[in-house]
Image (cartoon, rainbow, N blue to C red; front, side, top):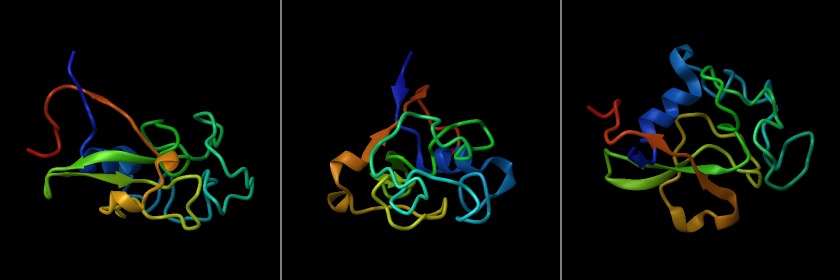
Length: 124
């Protein structure tokens, strides 16, 4: 089996599904509890997946809205970028926000998920 980073479009689709949410699991940034620097839990560190139960996408994927920003591949610009919020972010960014300057992202706030398969099904 082949493994790869998800594409930017695949990550966005996984985060919002067909519901077209602005944020993971909601249209409002304050209606879902994400692991970010402004979380009311105020833990300020990486947490085990699914600790924040409301941060679950329509496809039941945990922690797309917080915990770690995730490396994905942007086929339009042919480069790796970051999606999602990390535990250090003091804002909750919408699903369509992308970090293109990887040098500004502290390594302890970044992670990745893998997809099975060779080709991105959303880039064709």
